[in-house]
Image 1: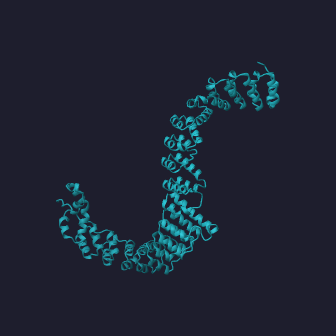
Image 2: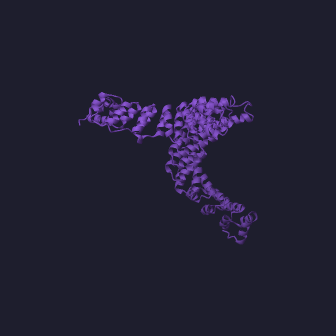
Image 3: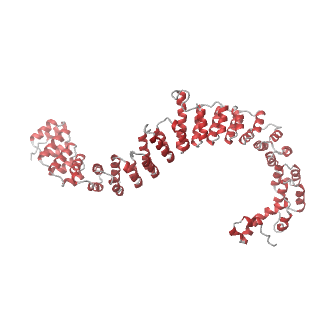
Length: 587
C-alpha cells in the first residue's frame, strides 16, 4: 500500500524549520489521518476520500459523526457496506442534536450500545423534548434526576415540564439553575412548590451569589434565612460582585455582624468597590448616627477596624489606603500585623502615613522595636532596610542580640548605627561570649570606651578570658584603674590578677576595700599581699560591718586589737562570734 500524501494542514501548521523534514510531516499526518478520513465520510468530501481512503480503514467515528449530523441514509449505507460499526457516542450525538429517527434506528440495529439514561441527559441538556419523551420510559427513576439537572442548568423549562410528570427530588436541579443564572427555571421550580429553605432555597441563593446572577439572587433572597443571606453576602464580597452585594443589601435586613464578615472578606480579597458599598450600607460614614461614641457607633468602628486589619494581614494595599483614615485601634496593632505577615508594601505605606502626620502614638515606637526584632529573627534584610530608611529614630531592642545569635552580619550592619549603647553593649557581650570574633571586631567599631568597659566586665563574669583579653586590649590604659576597681567589686579575680601589676598602692587599696565590701574572698586573697596596712584595716572593718565572715576571717590576723574590738562591737552576731572564738595573732 502506497504511503498517502501528507496533509496540507500539517504542512501549513508546522514551524518552518520542520516543513523541510518529510519524516516529521509524515509522522504528524499519521496522527491526524484516521480522524480526517472519518470526517470526510460523514461530511461527504469525495476528494479527500479519493486521496486517503485507501491508506487506512474507517473507524467507528465515521458512523458516530453521521449519527450526530442526522444522516440516516449514510448510516444505513455504512451499516450495509462496512463492518466498523459505531460507538455509544453515536447514540449521544443523535440525542443531543434531536435526531429521534436516527436514535430509533440505532436502537434497532445496535441495541447492545444503547444507554438511555446517558442519552436522555444529552437530550435534556440541549432541550430536545421529543427525544426526552421517547427515552423516559426506558430510564430508571433514580437516573432521571441527572437529566433534570442538565435541563435546569441549561434553562430548558419544557424539558422539565415533560420529565416532572412524576415527583422527583429537584434540589440538584434548582442548584444547577441558580448556579447558571437560569431565572426562568428557578421561578418555574419555586412556583411548583420547591420552596423549602434548608433543602432548596438556601443553597440555591449561595450558588447564585457565587455565580453573580443578580436576578436569581433577587428572586431567592427574601425566601432565605438570615444565616444564608450572610453567607451569600460574604461570598459576593470576597468575589468582588458588587451588584449582588447591592441586591442583598436592598432586599434583606442584614445584621451588623454579617456586614462585618462581608467587610472582612472584601478587605481580605482587595475588593475596594465592594468595600465602599458595604461601608455606605452600615451607616453612611464610619461614625454611625451617634457620632461614633454610642453603642451603634462603636460597633461600626469595630467592624471597620477588623476589615482594616484583615487587609493589612493579607497585604491588600488598596484597601488599607481606603480604610486607614477610619481605623480607630492602636497604630501598633496594624504595624505588627503587617510585619508578622511580611507585608512590606503595606508596612511601608503605614510608616509613611503615620510619620507624615506625626501620629506616633499608641505604642508606635514600641511596635517599631518589635518589628526590628522580628526582622532580625527572620533574617529579613528587606524589612530591616525598610525600617532604617523610614524611621528617623529607631530603638532596635534585642535585634542586635538576635543578629549575633544568627551570625548575621548583614542585619548588624543595618541596625548598629540606629542602636543605643545598651543594645550595642548587649550585642558585644553576646558576640564575645559566643566566640564570634568577626562580629565582635565589627561591633567594636561602634563602641565608645564606656561600652567596651561594661562589656569587658560582663564577659569576664561568665569566664571567657580569651575574649576578655581582646576587650581589655581595646581599652585605654587610663581606664585600667577604674576597670581594676570595678572588677574587684564584682569578684572578677582573673581580671584583677591581669591588671594587678599595673596598679599603684592607692588603686590596690581601693580595690581591696571594694572587694571586701562585696564579700569577694578570692579577690581579697589575691590583693592582700600587695595591700598596705591602712587598706587592710579599712577592708576588715567594712567586711565586718557587712557581715562577710569569710573576708573577716581572712583579714583578722593582719589587724590590730582596736580594729578587732570595733568589728566585734559593730559587726553582726556571726562576726562577733568568730572574732571572740579566735584570738587575734597580731602581725
